[in-house]
Image 1 (cartoon, helix red, strand yellow):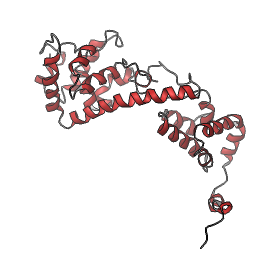
Image 2 (cartoon, one colour; image 1 turned 90 degrees about the vertical axis):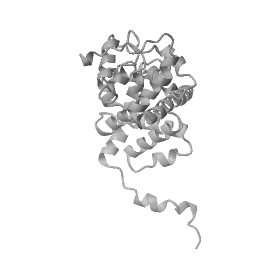
Image 3 (tube, helix red, strand yellow; image 1 turned 90 degrees about the horizontal axis):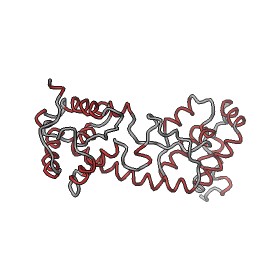
Image 4 (cartoon, helix red, strand yellow; image 1 turned 180 degrees about the vertical axis):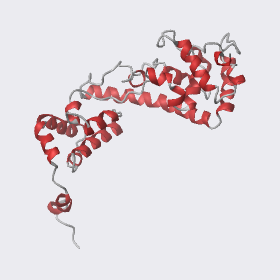
Length: 280
């Protein structure tokens, strides 16, 4: 049997495609200029995939396909942003996309820091116990460290926690102490959580209001810079996650093993002086 002529090869798919809903028609007509901009963006960034993306049977799928393509090639876009404007927004998501790139930021905001042990992985939370928070860390570095230790005591023996230096190890000293050991991810975790990596994705959070997500246009130079920045962020996070995976296999034992390796490398470190207010 001969193959269907090229002009008919996509006919069945086109015949099965449903017509746009009334809501979609209203949206397309009402925001036609913004949609034309969005279609041009998709064609500029993904010339090989553009037509298939824009031919999706509904507007939601078109936007989701674009976000997936962009995240796979460059860096992830902020998914809650898309979910809101696809479901509840007064304007379609491409109108908001025109205002700037919705970066997916990985920094820790105020609430995230205070709920570290309950909202994030135990392995990452445990790594933070080694480090001393910056003096200006939300104005309450001592209080937040005490809260972290109280949560840690539910998972790690108290006698192990008492080996920690009082107040924690400054990140600079911790970085040197873990150098060329399997625990390098501990210093990276501290710099990430304390927003001291120098990396855009890791040092900012929508929660703390330090970035609104609409400052950067979809220019090739900015996208290229963001792609390289995300590559560095991913490498740091992978290092942290790899260590966290290993720690979580047996947190009490492996936390103690980490202390055995790191503490002797810390200059003038004092063990057994950690403030245990939660035992009083």
